[in-house]
Image (cartoon, rainbow, N blue to C red; front, top):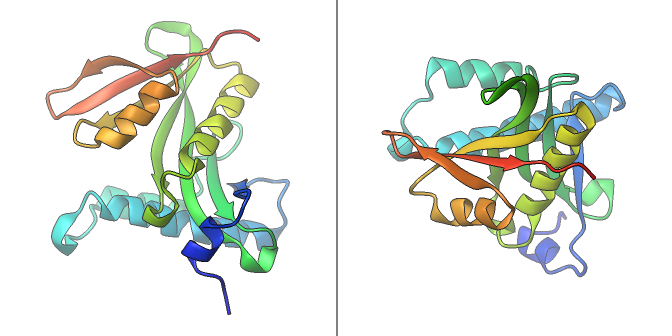
Length: 188
């Protein structure tokens, strides 16, 4: 019998691993598993935007059908966070999609745009989001990006607060209620 989220989250220390769906370094089997987990997590994220069981938009359905593309190397990555010590006990608990983009402030540079970060409700407040953001930062540094960018709905106060503590700054707020945020990467 598989362990429950509660059992897994009570493990000390918390054992979270981040996998990359669609990576050429994975076996075919692993890519099938990671892609299934990624699709399930992105679907759960999207459901938070569709109250009362509304149908997904055609654009959202198309994204789900083609994951992990376009979030594959060299222009993007699809991260899946799993909890567990053994392959047979791993549980997907979060995801983050990252895509390189031209920097709107300087077209000679690129940024990594963080999209659709989601952590399952049971795994929240256990550092999973920070682990995913660290993976996105590593990808950004490896690609030579100068910053990470993201948008977060103004009504997602805990997420906005997390991004602020992780060094993101509010750049602007759109009329539809989204904060556009940026974290400039310093050279190490």
